[in-house]
Image 1 (cartoon, helix red, strand yellow):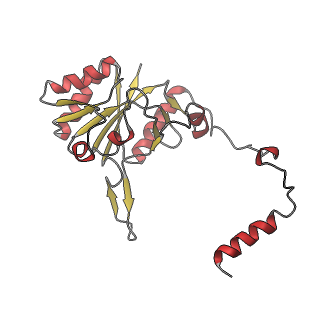
Image 2: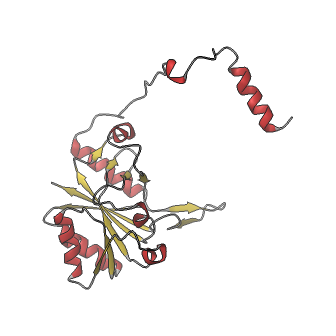
Image 3: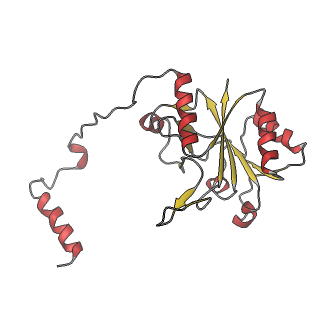
Length: 220
């Protein structure tokens, strides 16, 4: 008997007392897990997000609307970036932030669906927003909405600057985050820069996405 037959046989025996007409939705499943671990103020939730992002080796910055242009320009200058990809739908003040960097010799590139992976790989940086950020896990979620662009533009370039509006886009927990998301959209869950480890636990960054993730917490 093969392993497959062994597993399927165990499944059949476990289902012998289940009526054939029964559907999964007919049996209530208790969902008594905690939705949030502890009570926090919005400021404490933002602080937790910042700590967990940093724990995942993301670079975290805080900025006001007035200070965002100078911060973005400084981040691009620190990278020596000469090209930055800007998706459609970014708020005007964020576009102004990228434009301020342009004054320092940075060329702004629109998100063109005809752009090849090789052309995206040649882009130095990408600036986007996000759909939601989860504090307890230090996770940024993108759903391809306005200001976020296509999934590939945040996976191919080596440097991603993601702006999170605080407090309106920050939630405490994954269940709260899921309530804000449309499961039919292309969701990308990001916890720190892309990284993997080999069998000897040597960490390599930038394998499945950007090597450097910088998160700007934009506070009203």
